[in-house]
Image (tube, rainbow, N blue to C red; front, side):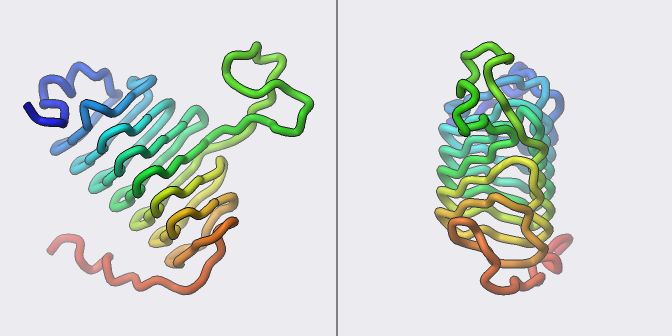
Length: 180
């Protein structure tokens, strides 16, 4: 038995849609599958959590222990990836003290804000990163391990730190590898 869902099993997960060569670990937790779309050549490894409105393009790898909390939307365009133990939030509780925190409380007693998170083509998130809601990681940008992304990132840069800042430009050479 494979550690990934078979094609037959995948058809029963309830995803909105999925492409060819999709490998999802049997140990992945999927909540709200009807709001999740996957392209071709997608691999999702063990112990990931996918929840909410998530669109994943083609040629995407999501490593082990990644959490995608997409209540307000997460989009990963083609040729993106997320390294182990990273988390992307599209919504956040207000920690200011005027509201209760967490999904177990009545909506009148919490204050949740956020917005869609977008990873453009060729962008990558390193291991153990946290990505805040309502931002875009532009084409070709990468985020180094253990970084906090709390604002949008410009294209083709190497970012890291808490908060993540641009340290240098990144080559666009990988674009030439498509179609070879």
